[in-house]
Image 1 (cartoon, helix red, strand yellow):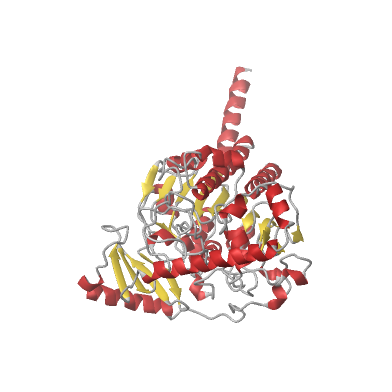
Image 2 (cartoon, rainbow, N blue to C red; image 1 turned 90 degrees about the vertical axis):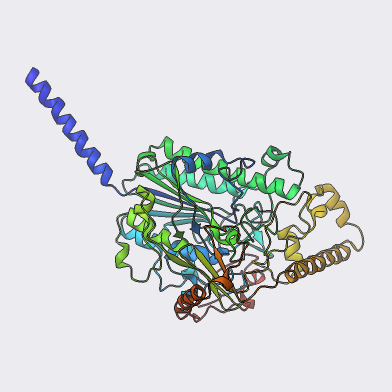
Amino acid sequence: MGDIGTFCVVLIGLCFLVSSAEGAKRPPHILYIVADDLGWNDVGWHNPDIKTPNLDRMAGGGVILNSSYVHPICTPSRNSFLTGVYPFRVGLSGTAITPHQARFMSLKTPTLPEKLKKLGYSTHMIGKWHLGFCNERYTPTRRGFDSFLGFYTGTQDYYKHTTAKGYDFRFNQTVFYPPKKQYSTKTYAKRAVDIITEHKRKKNPLFLYLAFQSVHTPLQVPKKYEKQYNNIKNKDRRVYSGMVTAMDDAIGAVMAAFRKHKFMGNLIVVFTTDNGGAAHIVGNNFPLRGSKTTVWEGGTRAVSFVYSKNLLKKTGYTHEGLFHATDWFPTIFAVAGGKPKQEKQLDGVNQWPMIRSGKPSRRTEFVYEIDKSRPVSAIRMGKYKLIVGNPGDYNNWYRIAKSNSFCPIYDENETGSDEDIFIYESLNNIVRNAKGYVKWLSSKLPGYRMVRKWHRYRQLERCRKLKKRDKAKWRFPRYLLYDLEADPSERKNIAGYKPVLVRKMKARLEHYQKKTKHVAGQSKRKVAAADPKHHHGVWTPGWCT
């Protein structure tokens, strides 16, 4: 009996080792988190005044990517995240897609979820799409995702899910109405937990793309989060900080679900923002220069990290190597078992050795932007950055205003409609903060709507004048060159001292400019058929080919 018992023990041990070996070879589950407009100084590991304990814990226990770069605005970055292709090559550079535009992520570029599905992954998306919806074939469930809960456009009310006089919220292809008065960040977290819970019974790996609306305007958050920052006098900044913490809580709930259902041993978490903070409103990129929409470091250098309990060989440190938004596609694809070298269309580089083992970055250069409409172009080569043309409208080193931000004009979806900008970008704090009964009573007074519209118009005009005045302060030469190792805040233009280097970098930039494309159907003009009034008040596909 002793020999039989020994044999059984050995057999069980061998089975365990085989099972462990097979488990180690299994493709990992992947959680890909994208924050919206999160500033360089809006996370706890850069700014102890911001409460992000869940993000801080993962950043500290993983690899912080200190030189991770994105594009200056939403749509181009999201294109790079999901295709690994520079947006200027597919007609999506420069500006974000507005709801009335027939613009979209190119069907000629395979998406990351499409590739992962072929490797056996279940693929799910939650949150902000912002890559086109004028035809159903441009929407998430037609671009590789098994399911989608979220919105198609670029910004909306966190509770009502409305933007530019239309409703925008979907579950897969169907218009969906979450519980009333539920904050969208909570809605997304609940959906993520449901996906994780449902997936625990499945044997294939999970890819979850969690693209938060936070912390994009409008500035809205449940009071319990705003109250955590009562020490901040600037109400806009107080609300904004609460929005960051609310997002962190949601991420904490998602991670708790992964732990509960025992995913952690084979899970990789990617975190990045889509662009720098809107510092001209209330985000904080200091000491970096500029704001979202600009090619300054404040608009393009992203807070980012990768975390895994078991799959990283080196953790708890900051990597200074160059990383670009296009690199996420080949890196994640490689982690999942794919072969990115066979994907000839990619501009991105597989950076898994850098992330996993702390090896040097495989990237020595990247393009910040090529936007012929401004015009501006910018490139990084080694430690040097060259900007050719207009860097953007917001050129200062912005600190947080002590009082409320009076003039938060936001260019991404600026339509010229004072009403839309007023409602969704918080131009009038008095009306925004008024109690419900005061609003109701005021609305019954004769001439109320006329006075309200006049007041909005005056505020908008004043904001435009302030913006114009601020812009007039800055007059730049055609070429701006910075040594970002010595001067990360971009305070000293050294183009005049290094003319040979300027010519070399300009020639390299021109090489990329030859690849820019105007894609048929990617017009930036407004399409009248897109208006929600033609679709029962809902932003709906079906008005382009």
